[in-house]
Length: 155
Length: 455
Image 1 (cartoon, rainbow over the protein chains, first blue to last red):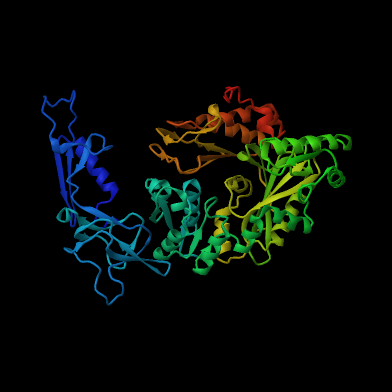
Image 2: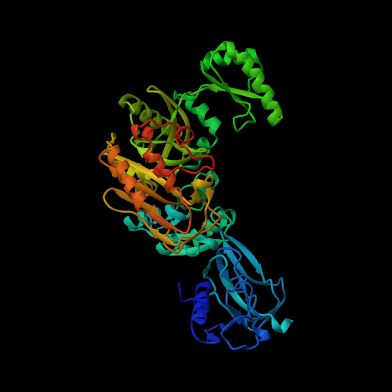
């Protein structure tokens, strides 16, 4: 199952652990469809970093415990249910969206088939589709990222 | 035989079912909630699929996501374990409609036994004794006296809306009935806003004894021995054993016969348990039938050498039972349920991370668990983290081995019910086999703060 072209939570956790343990400031990893940059947060206070002022962009994400996932430019659209992922309403129809398309919040991006029912899945975010993470016709589990959206062009 | 079984459950029972499938050469598919991503059943299964957020209603009880997963992964059968969807006739029916085998009884049997009052009526008609009592609310003293003639004395007056002992009276004789009936009615009206009262026979120190049955749907219904589950706290079983100590061969035969009859009457197929209250040396009363595999099934497995979960799967696959009609028990087995609860604080749940986990072993010891060092017990589900089963040639040896095992069992980071169990095992009355459903209340001193005294 690890041949999915995506980072799952486990891999991200492993990366954060790696970054936290290693004597580095920043870790950047690029996969086929996704880029992750992890920067160590700096704590004001008695850290051994010789009074260096905390950088404004390193404000830690709450609860990230010493490191923070920064540069999380892309927002995933995740499967809200278990089902078979289809990019188009019918086999011969055009896909709802392609990579590079601009989408609006609420726009249908795919269907998930479960128990003979086709459920249209809307996007919760507006932006540009950066990548499509699931194969057409593949089973997807609850919470699995299906698309990556770059919300910045819409902002 | 099945190609792939989906296990619609979590915790130790999911692990247990995966192991049975593996022994039978069947592939396994686990489902899990977001809170169980690191759970053992997810690791052990051939495949695992996330079906929803932590709340059970959105994951382990979410029928559409479970059925969809079974279809997507090509599972031809679903094992429901216990709890969650195991006794949901609607779920069993949907499986049937989707051409997925439900490893359990037919929906009709689940439904019939699920309505507890109707089930007791049905059993009474089939000639199986139930606790005698009034069929509905008792109107007045005259009606109460009439019911009393059928139940005999002592009897129990209970508030229909009741609970916690209020509106309850034990009555020893007809002379006492009049006053007690009026007093209970007043108390019930004051406490619950309803003066409606029921009457049933009061059982003196009854034991909870249940019978494991297997039925293959081809006319073979076999009783696989009994279990005594009298050691309970607030109706939650904590320690179970087989055989039931001190049971006469005649009463034992009567229990097994009644259980087979109960299963036959409802057209039961697969594994099930018929529960009875037993009073004295002669009287048995049907309470209910559990239409699933039970938590305490390993004690029966240990004394009979029958793998009940494997039998469930084989029956569901249409195989004929290949067991003798009379099954003999060898030795004695005891199970202790180790819950993440603090007996010193009124059994308050104690979720959190397990910092150390060294399970016991050695001769006669079996441990069923999904826990491990570093495992975090999620707060969303039940508190059972392990079952320790001890087998001995006789009850004394089983008790000795259980004490040894619980003494070895090292669980760090959370509180568990192990101290409580050690206290029961050391109790002189328990050792003599004097057990009944009020045993914990009567014989175990949980102290002013509910703290078990150290032995």
